[in-house]
Image (cartoon, rainbow, N blue to C red; front, top):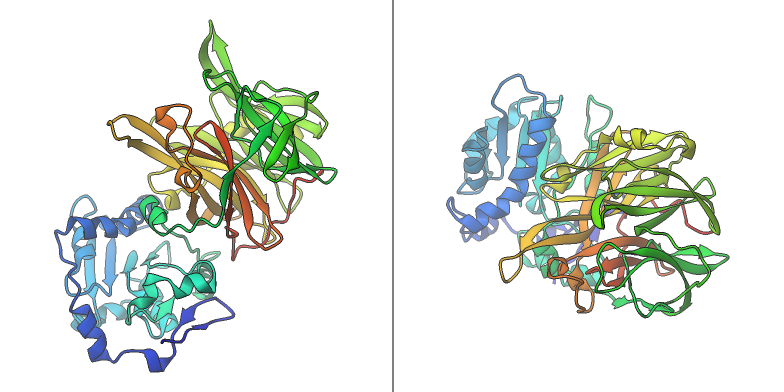
Length: 511
């Protein structure tokens, strides 16, 4: 049985020398691989690196020539990715190198500041001295926006989960990277810009469903309003030590006739209506605490002759039991969220809808007095490279101890059901945002509707819809994640802390 060591600085997991194969043994394993050009499944697999790379090059890399220069490092006997990237629609100029199959191209590793990008797909888990290799590759990358693309599986979860991880069963896999490993690497590599950033490519829904581990999942019970479904709630918050929740309430047979009601926790996963509390004609409520003041809001739908004519986000502020309406967001913009920053200012996430997608923006204001539709609409787009083609937005932001913002979010896409009808897919996601650089990190899927018990959706188009509320830290270090499910129920599931390596949650919603 192999032994594994873990670095206390960067969380890299590796095997000691005595468990490493000889060069001949290692190559014998690689010779068995059947990754060839024209294999549609393998090319689709590699597109998980190719597509984000293309997006990055199109908006970020500054080039002196019209054709980006790239190196496929560790390309294997059949350089499939290099062939893909050199052909349309990419048309990049590609070099290749492989220690066993193309060693004669080692001169490529001597070209300092030459390449716009270097790819290393399914390579780094085989490296005996990864830091030395990364330093060599880094010297070859242009310092004015070049990018190193690494594709590997990362270490997640507990020791027991690692023991059962299929990725460790390949004897040529000897180095296993954690999110913190890449962050340490980015901080260690020399750069002539403010910082070397690390980013992670878009999470894969199918891979999530295949590897997910459901620790615990259930639905909340709401008492006192039996005639209505309660769903798409805000994150649970405390009033004088007791958990409460604002929930969207609507009859199953009705559309666009929601009210937001306040519920108090009265049992395990049980909430009871606070009968005399204010009702709000809103959808999808949210709540944060900004400088000891409650900020509450939701989406208000406008109608004309009984038909929907638009919608806006309405905002209320004040004491938790005495909230006053004070402003609204831009017309037809949902998912506007605020977060208090470490310097006392306020970050605002916007949600701009285009004809094909949704763009999340960010802007900083000095105080809630500055919040208005014009300011929100002027927010600049955050870096969407990690999200790929998925559209989505922030549902609940958290200030982290590092000054970054941990975002519990939703991202989705259009799909078809068994009958060929279009459905809206909403996945529960998370990412970390750094305001000072406008960069996003560690985007991943946390959950889907399939993680919760089976229950009918409000309509067929919502059968794969989970609209997340937020997370609450548990005493065991894990999180209770709350989410609306199918526009009919509010669920709770237990997950690992999603912002590991980026700091702890520094704010709260206790009143």
